[in-house]
Length: 197
Image: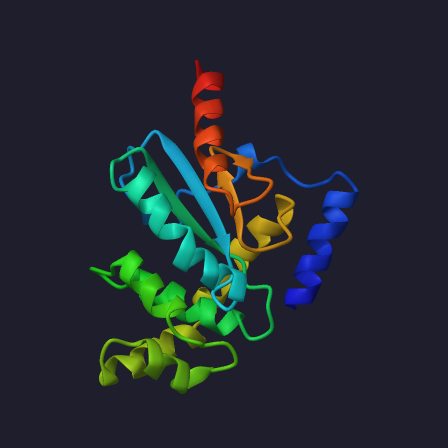
């Protein structure tokens, strides 16, 4: 399924049929930061991707400190499970994000702080749930059709907007060519501010 999704993304891009990023729906995605922040960063990620884990460790703390913690930007996270074994992990994260009082930043630290690829079902729920009894509830949520539908909607969103790799970063509806150079973020936000005037 994931390989088919990535292939479809490449076909859409090659045919010039992908949707413009300006129309990407992100309001329902988990958010780090304040809702009224002037800039929006969309992080397209696969929770089982080694490069995404590296991004979380190296780039996310810098983005949080420089842009999010001071109210200059918010980060929305779009799940795009394209690696083998990542879909069920995306289901687990989706369920945990829906819990009242869930701290998205702490959740991502927990997810990216472990090697969870290839672990599924009850074992995955036990590794991610804060307490033992909650693992049963988490596993049940992971199996629900509406959870699968939410993850597939996010995957579809990435595909129709021409995204084919992770991590991908979109700032104010413009994709960064390369997400590893910190100066690119500042430049992209300045360009968006200038364009908005």
